[in-house]
Every structure is written in structure tokens, then in C-alpha cells.
Amino acid sequence: MALEIVVIVISYLLGSISFSVLLARLLKGIDIRQYGSGNAGATNTLRVLGTGPAILVLVLDVLKGIVAVWLGVWAAGWGSGVAAACGIAAIIGHNWPLYFHFKGGKGIATTIGVMATLAFFPALYAGIIAILSIVITRYVSLGSLLYVALTPVFLLITGFTYPVLWTSLVIAVFAFWRHRTNIIKIAQRRENKIGSKPKGGKRVV
Image 1 (cartoon, rainbow, N blue to C red):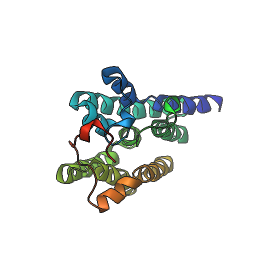
Image 2 (cartoon, rainbow, N blue to C red):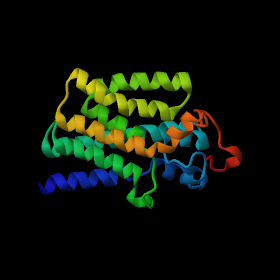
Image 3 (tube, rainbow, N blue to C red):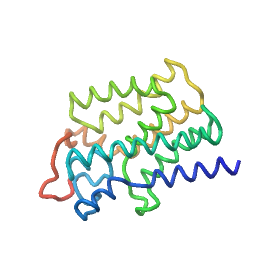
């Protein structure tokens, strides 16, 4: 039991490493949360720092989710509630990072890492639809919401274990809560599209 608690805590601490914030400080000496959309994630890194740093942030954030799940697998076995809890803990850490005053990103890249590890094919199917929606609409937020909404659906269709299903549902709640302002902007057609640049270097609201 003690080991299980430890790996969950480690997963949260791992998730709290905000690569977007760190890279922006390293490359430009800025707090990325004060620029672009104000979000500490790959999409805003693309807006503020460019393609290369954005890809690096995306990969590292995905890896956080993968490593967290495997920590849970190591501690309690495959398909366990601990593995699922470690994945959720990493996403919580990304969204509310201990090291950065609990102001982080929206957790989608880390979610991809978590769900692709727990349930590869359902996550893949949802990801394909999400990517298509981003290509068509250029709204990353819409694709992100479709991804977290459809993953539980594909789990139900293809088969699932209850820890994985509940994990996907909890993640969906987190994602919709973190994207609540984006949802309003999408409805009003004011949402920033992928590739949009911050105006005058200031935060886009």
C-alpha cells in the first residue's frame, strides 16, 4: 500500500514539471503563461516559441503520461487501479503544478500519453477523429475535446476494464473544465486557430 501511494505522488510530481514554462524561460527568459493564450502547453508554445520547441514540449508532455502509467504498472500490475490513478495524478500535476504556483496547462498531451498506454486502440481511434477535426477547423481545443469525449465511447465499443473507463471519464471532466472558456469562444467563433500568433507579443484573451 505504501508503495502504491508513493508512485501516485511521484506521478503527480512528474506531471508538475511544466516543460513549456521551463523551455520559455530557457530560450527567451519569459513566463509563457503571460503570452499568447496564457496556457502552459504545446499549442501556446507553438504560438510563442515556434514549431521546434512546440514539438519538444508535446513529446515530453506525452512521455509524462506514459511514464506515470508504467510506474503504476510496476507497483500494482497491468490494468490496476493504481496504474490508472498514476495517470490521473500526472494530469493533475500538469494542470495544477506544484512547482509553478498550481498554474499549468490543460493536460491534453499528458492525457494522450496516459490513454495511449492504458488503452492504445480506443485512444488511437479517438485521436484520428480529433486530428481530422483540427485539420478541418484549425481549432486545437475542439480536437482536444473530441479526443477526451470519444475515448470513453471507443472503450465501450472495443472492450474495457473499469479502472480504464473511469480514468477516461475523469479525464474528460478535467478537460472540459479546463477548456470551458474555449468552449464559449468556439460557440462565438472567437477561438484562436492553430498557427495564430500573439498580437504584439501580449497575451491573447
